[in-house]
Length: 440
Image 1 (cartoon, rainbow, N blue to C red):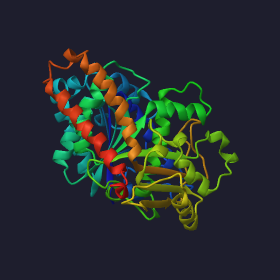
Image 2: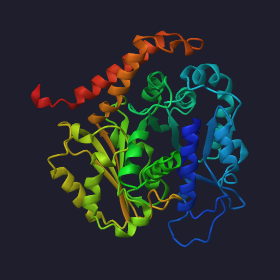
Image 3: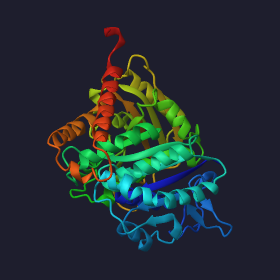
Image 4: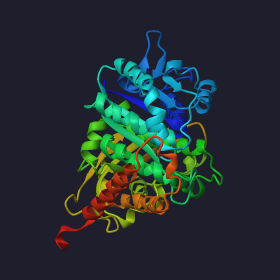
């Protein structure tokens, strides 16, 4: 038994968490209160209680902690359809507000509230026999997800130093902004992601909006639509940790196969097929076609184009009616493709896993119900495209020292320069990795 604890931070993280546990309940044949439905599928009970804790009464409770500095979003979880799934102590909120400012979430408010949050994480960890790590969902656009989320990551790394942290991080989008100080929050939170996250799944709302518009027939998607797509992603990422797979995997195996250097741990996720669940009966694509689709720009969940970069490593998770020989054939097809390039020092960086569990519908018509699917996690040099435009927006804003005074009551100004310099080194790392050694 190797358990995983999920921590959902800030408005974005809490709402993603709600969609994740909605989906996990369906996958495990659980009612919304955590009691077991009649079991029709042999694989439908969570293997070894990886994500759920089973009480003596037979009730399943998520190994999860929800955290927000104000009460509005957490109250929605409490009174929502999943309200009875969680105990009240799992949902933590206060009558505070980070005001979309990293410094308030990290220093002013965060320092007062971190102890209660860590106490609940410790209680959840004490229910685990062999904890393998944490999955943190958050956005680094607002104050709570960036500031308090960074503080939580720092403390997890300190108190659980041998456990892995996987961050599902929603990055700001260059062409979509919810706050004028997003570039500051992004840059200031970069230190925690670089130092205390072992794997960071890079997601942008702009890419998810494009998927909804172009593939799912949702012209005006809301956050619930986006969060259910992210839930399907995390379901597939963890499917071979929760159910028997071929082979089974865990967070350590993911890091080993995807991260060549500790600083290069940012991961590009993609999925196929991307069609509404009500059209799944029309799906006629072969496994090879689904695999190729994962490498297309239209399938990735971040604002970058993988065709303009080189791959360092890929992890392919297949689900449903897929045979091992199909997996081998699909990977062979990718290796022969001239449009998909790998860095010359890692020319065959593929890892795959196969699970018989098909994709369940998340509750809406976004995704699900497919007989087979493929999810890819890729480490690619194209991820530099995510950082470059956001760094440029920071430079424009900071050159004028615009809105800097919102941060200076809680933190020294030199942190802006230090964190921006770290990101410049990260950009340089991706540029150097992409260089072909034969050209030197």
